[in-house]
Length: 99
Image (cartoon, rainbow, N blue to C red; front, side, top):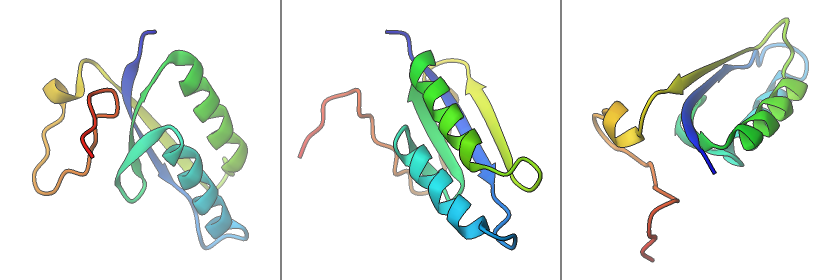
């Protein structure tokens, strides 16, 4: 099962009618597939099938006239391509989990 890494960023216009509801729904959809690293930014590790499910779900929620979605596919493993300064809340769910 080939996985790839991507950064998903969104901007939902909350001053429009239904904007706050769309914002919550987009966040919930992203939380199901990735890890929030900033308020409207998620790191996603997914197969093509799961990524297409996430994309379809988010695009159904968004208003394309008011909202924005950006996806950056990351080339390589997170450890090699991401540098974090300050607190990093990322968890490797594919690795061993210690409770």
